[in-house]
Length: 122
Image 1 (cartoon, rainbow, N blue to C red):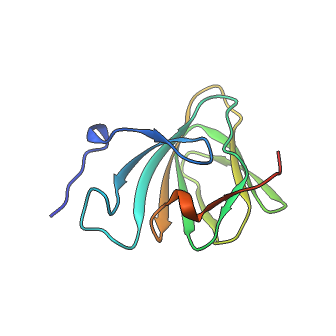
Image 2: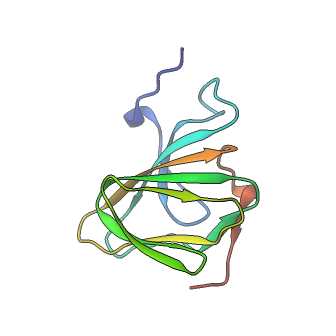
């Protein structure tokens, strides 16, 4: 059985600029086909616009609020919202609030820098 406490995982900055903790991933568990991370965006911070070649993602907002952009669609998001992000879809999340925006990110296959393609969009 793999039980990993979020506080025991060292955070790192992903290619899109968000601070994450990979709670469960191939590197620290027997999980091989997906990953679960907690990400945090400071007030006013946004992830860089990007997409993934193979990975589909689910973002689940734990705290805070912001603006989710997927391709040309924009939607306000807040605590309790889940967002589906298909592979190949340009996306970006911006913290529009005054508190940290904290969200879970489920990736299948697991997150990798190699699968993350940065866009020229601002």
